Length: 354
Ligand code: CP3
Image 1 (cartoon, rainbow, N blue to C red):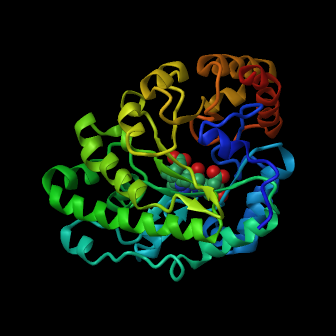
Image 2: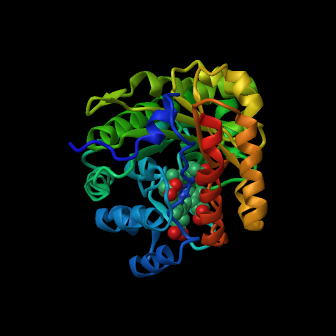
């Protein structure tokens, strides 16, 4: 196994010294890139792209050819697990993900199995292996999954939702059924991420996009508890190196201290919390990733650079910061503005590491 040429991202996640702040962008492969839209048109639909390891690899590499990013992220989706459980995932143009067979009661929940990652999800592991080969040790590869709570929202609602009424109905009216669903998902996510690590993912991230719609008590009981179960079950070393794990709950500002106690190496932070406050809360126990508002990429390159300067100053001196957006890049963003963003981090961050 060749050594990594650029391991800034892995070192920053472990709060080890780096000469500058590493950067990658959530959803860095995607519709804002014309070369993505081209391949996507040829493939027909999004899941066809995900299920073809060569195409998934090509799309993963696209942003790395354009920009000096410090990590690649597997091109896939969080909804591969419920798809493998037999819920029938499909994407309707302009409406986001949908399931043919949502899960609404204990009977349906009891029927769900834990997918075998090398069987039903073998296409994901093949994509990981193909991408690792193609990266040739240039930058590390990030594997990922959704959190049990976030996956449950899609599985119970049958797709995206604004008010979470079905999933909250299940949670409050039949908490034991909800716990059974979340436990099955936590087991599935743990084996899925461990298989990604065995296939070559050098770091993993858990996306809890919807944990922030819960009360603090319900967040602890229905989201954080199952992320804890995952962190406890993950392989933490492979190829002679630590495999860092990042947890990201959107809108979790006040709970970052509790999240830091899970044993995760790093936490994702969105733009509604200042990194200075986040850093105080976690007491340098974990690294922090974030946190520019993705909409800032609509502003001029000069304004973007100003915002990068503000965020770097907010984190302050010292190691343990991975620059990122606070959520995925928007499809309407001009790729040249993404380039300006990345360039600003390269230019301004070394001062914080001296
Ligand atoms: O970051 C990356 O570049 C890796 C790829 C990635 C995708 N989805 C590709 C994708 C990752 C890490 C995800 C995670 C994901 N998927 C999350 C968690 C992170 C977040 O954004 O909150 C969630 C909630 C999903 C579920 C999902 N997938 C939704 C709601 C949608 C539709 C919304 C949209 O942006 O169209 C998807 C589709 C999806 N996943 C696309 C991509 C590139 C767009 C598909 C297309 O039309 O080409």
